[in-house]
Structure formats: structure tokens, C-alpha cells
Length: 202
Length: 223
Image 1 (cartoon, chains in turn blue, purple):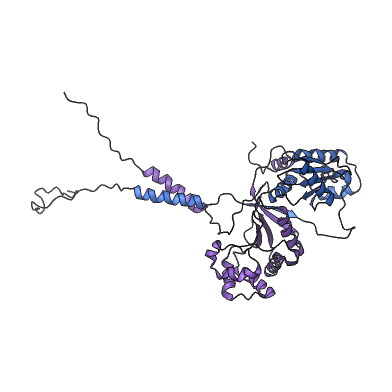
Image 2 (spheres, rainbow over the protein chains, first blue to last red; image 1 turned 120 degrees about the vertical axis):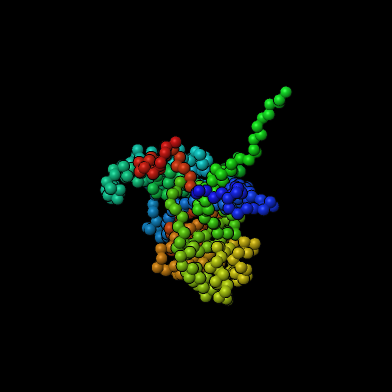
């Protein structure tokens, strides 16, 4: 016979009356401690893990120069100056600041995008073709539209109360709206005065 | 009368699928986890649409926390000697009198934020316990004693032959004057290209960049 008989029948040697048949043990294991440990580790890894991968944003600053001829001149018609003040307020004006500050306006980070887009459209509509466009076309693989916003320059001037977040947000706004030329510079004294006056008036 | 007996069911449930899922999640987290090095300060970076990935090697990072303290860190995991050379350069240039053990401790330190006068004291503390030390920040505001300038200078020398990335990681609440002071320290070293560390944000729909990325097929799904 193929099966091993443990039945304790007549065959094989006889067991004494005190010898008991080995109990068949269940193969089921209590998994509760293992699960406990598993979940403990899961919670540990969830808390220590860093999910958000940081990215980086390029920022190129111009070299400080005192010489007048080396400085980039912005065309007045295409310039938009953005002043960052405290409590996420933004002041802006187009072209030169008027002596009576009539073109000095205020907005916030929601409104500034439209200001930039509108100004860019305006500059592109007033574009006059000249010889310097050929070079820009060549740089952009002959894209004829690349020259249209050539005169559009955004000047960013954060004041002392502006936060780092404001600065990054406005630089981000430049990327979002495709502004190719922008500069981050210091405020003029008259602009500081104007911001102070406006803030006091509120 | 024979009462109807409900068959008594075992309260034991089969936990096997449960365990399977649990360990699947566990293995996922174990593989996905990258331990961040302990930093003396908590920084909440602003968001931006930038997608460039943060370099982990050949970089120096200046961290600006919400109260305007500046920290300096060298990222050179591939070659710890560079990090050693950075602090050695500082030690030689400024006569700080650091011992070799202290300089080796700097290699294990994630970032320092103390004036030169306190550097020796900080490096006497083992790297693991430096989180408890209160660090005042590297002096940056004072243009006559901009110590960050020397740190950067030393790093540039130590990284010679490598393409070095300059990272600035600022807290959302940090003020602009301190940020400008850091930029000035870089500018004095003739460095004009920076990378600002930010968290990823979606591009607002309908804008110029959105159209551009859509054309390139970078945007996987449109909302």
C-alpha cells in the first residue's frame, strides 16, 4: 500500500495504550502581528517621504554697469514698469512716470496678467518694421512674429516690503505670458515716495 | 420543538488579501522614498511653472528662511573632497583655525548658517546634533562684511573644472531686501545666472506659455 498508515490498526508495531495519535496542526498562521508591523512601516514611510519634487527656475541678472553707453535703453512706448509693494499689492505704469503720477495705477496678482497681456498686444499692434528685425528673425528660425514684441520691456521693481514669493510670482508671470525682455531693478526715490503716499491715503 | 439553530460562523476573516495590499503599499513607499537631509530650517518654497529638475550634484545652495537668515550648503555627493576643499578654502582665507576633524565634520553637515566667528563652535557639534544649535544666519546685509561672498568665492575655487549651479531657495515670506543681498553676493563674484528653487505649479489655461507647451505636446491633458 502506498499510503502510510498511522491509523494504529493491526499492521505495524503496536502502540501502547498511552501513546496518542499526533494531532494534525492547522496550517493557518495568525497574521495579525505581521499586519501590525506592516502598517506601522507604511505609516512611517508615508510620513518621511517627500512627494513634491522641487523644480528650479532660471534667473539671469544683468551685470551692474555705471557706464551710460553700456546700459540697455528701453523704448518708452514699449515699457511697462511693475512695482511690488507690501501685502501683495502691485503698482504699475506704462512708459515714463508722469510728473503728476496720473498714469500710476494699482492692481493685484490676479489683475497684473491682463495688464501685461494688453500692453503686449498694444506694443505688437504698433510695431514698425525696421532693419533690426532681420536679425531677430534669423535667431528664431525665420519666425516673422518673433520681432513683433521686440520693443516690449517689463521693468520689475520690488520694494523693501515685497516678499520673495511676490518676486518669484512676477518672474513666473513673465514666463507665463512669454515676455522675452524683462529686468529687475531698484526703485527710484520718487517711486518710493509715491508708494508711501498711496499707502498712507488708503 | 426543535429550535432553528443558526450555524455559528467563525469570526475569523481571511486576512491574506489585506496583507498583500499592505505589503504592496509598503514596498512602494520604501522604493519611492528619498530621505531628505535634515535641514536646520523649514522652508516653504513658492510655486512656479518652471519644470527644470533640481540638480543634486555640482551645486551650491543659498537658503533664505522666513526671518531673513541665510544658510549656505554645498551639494557634491559624488565627490566629498570638493566640500572639504570649500571649507578648507574658507579656513585658509579667513584664518579660522579649524581642525581637520572640524573640517571633516563640515562634509557631513547639510548646511551652515553662522557667521565665521561661530563656525568653529558649530562644527564642534556632531553633524546629527546641529539641528538643535540655534544658527543666526550668515551675515549678508552689511556690504562691508558680506560673508556669503567669501563662501561663494571659496566654492567657486573648489569646484573648478565642474559646471557649477547656483541655487537660491527662499521661503515664501522672506523679504526682497535679503534676497537682493544674496544676489549682490553672487554678483560680486561675477555670477549672473541663478536657479531659484520652486515647487511645481500648473500653467494657467489660455496663456501664452500654455499654448506653447500644448504645441510642443508637453501638456499631457487639457483641463
